[in-house]
Amino acid sequence: MISVDRTVGNQWWVSSGLKANEQVVVEGGQKTPVGTEVSVQNADSPNSPSPSGTVAAADVKER
Image (cartoon, rainbow, N blue to C red):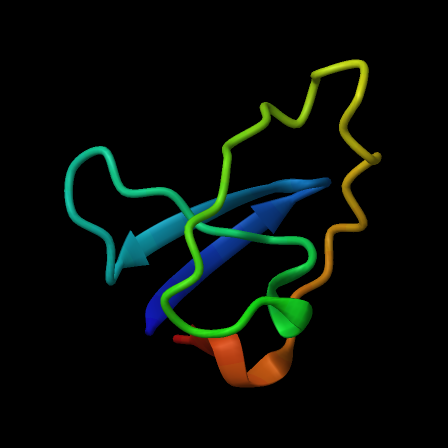
């Protein structure tokens, strides 16, 4: 579980729950079974969908 202290637009400040170089899947995670290998696309990639800025409430713990 990650903790998010603040959001500005589609950018999130993750204050805890990640180690160095770990990344968070912010879109399509509900359709992805646990343990599935994913390929990373940058949010500004022309082939990536525009970020929705939302995440399932169970995935975020706010302070």
